[in-house]
Image (tube, rainbow, N blue to C red; front, side, top):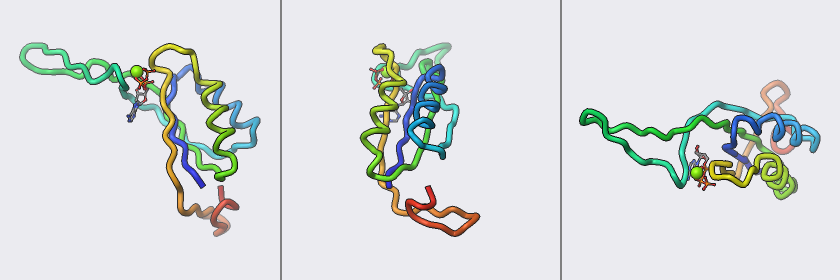
Length: 112
Ligand SMILES: Nc1ncnc2c1ncn2[C@@H]1O[C@H](COP(=O)(O)OP(=O)(O)OP(=O)(O)O)[C@@H](O)[C@H]1O
Ligand SMILES: [Mg+2]
């Protein structure tokens, strides 16, 4: 299993969520986040103090999927989150060693 964490534009959440749903992905976690990427981290000085001025609001989606669905899920996210402008976001993929559905005790892909 893999966990996909993608950080995308807020106004792309509905499209990505709906497309994942149509593909049969049901479970996901969505969080409002702030962050910066390649253009970020610039510091502006004001009255002797420095401020990070470019942490922009984004949305993070976390979704755990079977390995077999990885490529298609990545495609779906890119297609639905892309504008072609800077700040479209990023996708991180990690391996997940176990999942347990608390209600039933099921584990592994059965529990996703
Ligand atoms: N290396 C990283 N580690 C963790 N989070 C990141 C990283 N890069 C980007 N992010 C997150 O993704 C969001 C969007 O990043 P962004 O799309 O601006 O990436 P980028 O590398 O600057 O690409 P682009 O040049 O297209 O803007 C950031 O606000 C941040 O939350
Ligand atoms: Mg950027």
